[in-house]
Image (cartoon, rainbow, N blue to C red; front, side, top):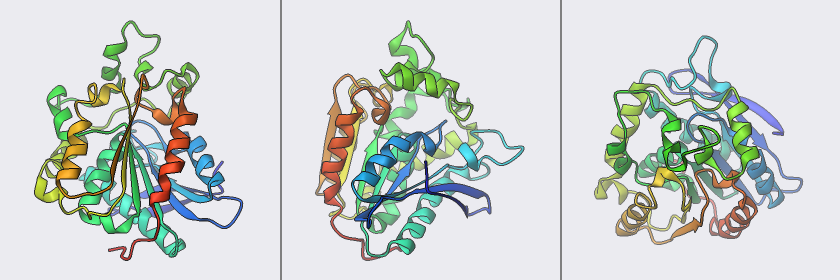
Length: 295
């Protein structure tokens, strides 16, 4: 369980729920966990504990419209007016809190799925605020758009089609049935986001497809892209390879792609997650020193 729960204000005054997990000894680094759509950051308890064992103090927050950040009377998945831009900005707000609390520590940013898309956008203007980035369940968001109806609320169960006949609507998340069943039973999981926010999210993807914008990411930022080969969100890696190519073409020098064979969308909840955690810990040494500027 987290050692502390706290809140911070979003740009429109909404209170964002956040958490901190402490290692037993003196921290060697700070990690930020940015979760995906239709879930909450407490699902990443095992990842946070893994990071703690390696000496990282771990932070995470529930996106607006998600988890404990959903305010009374609000609908889960409703990000609010200009919600996507605010969601991206919240990553920066938490990064500022982490930097203030741990000025001498490198910051490792780990982002999954929708959180990875928001993080990609965050990096266009803020790559000097973190020291290494892990993107999981990710790809080129703009290339995903043709498969979706942006005039309808995003239904996460649509990604289950490749696994029909399926045991649940969310078999696409993981081969681990226990983890899938936990997700299905969790009242804070399983929803999409509102139509306006979906459109705003894909509107932001235009910047991610612009080579001049991607070139704003600092060249020496280490980036790990970690995905499952059977993740329907990356369409058989068709959305992942272009992401790697775009980053390298923009001059980002240290881009690593790790594909886990037969794994699905949530590699941190997969049957081979011990392997994923081991690889992540080994790679995280690339976050060697704190960034010089927090913007």
